[in-house]
Amino acid sequence: WAGTKTKCLNSTEMSTTVPGYMAKNPEQWLFNDIESCCEQYYSWVYKGCIGLTSGNSVDSGTDKWYVNHQEEICQQDCPEEGMGACGGLATPWDQLYASAAVCCAEKLSWITPSTCEAQSSLAT
Image 1 (cartoon, rainbow, N blue to C red):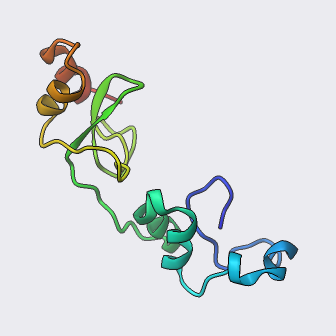
Image 2 (tube, rainbow, N blue to C red; image 1 turned 120 degrees about the vertical axis):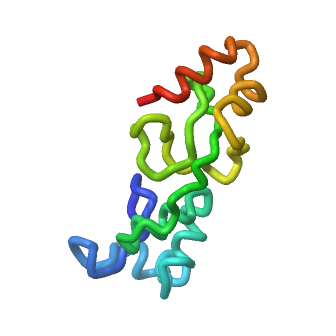
């Protein structure tokens, strides 16, 4: 697996051979397939790990909305973070809503609805 990146590495992608600690305990560190590695080390972003590891985007998101508490906006569940209202793929624990309006009402009720919706739709 690849340190701070949420992907698993094939031995052909590694700049050197498998590190010694992995070679000494291959049952813990090495897997025969991408799915097993991603499940073990990146279960919270499983689909993203599969996509990054295989080089294919396997999850396009739902285009539903979830709250970003830090920014106090609602963002869409889609793969390209920073593209308009897209906040990146939602995590499994994010509650999803059909619209920014519903997300704002449910999760950011202290913000004026029109302000929340406008900020959520223009997020960059």
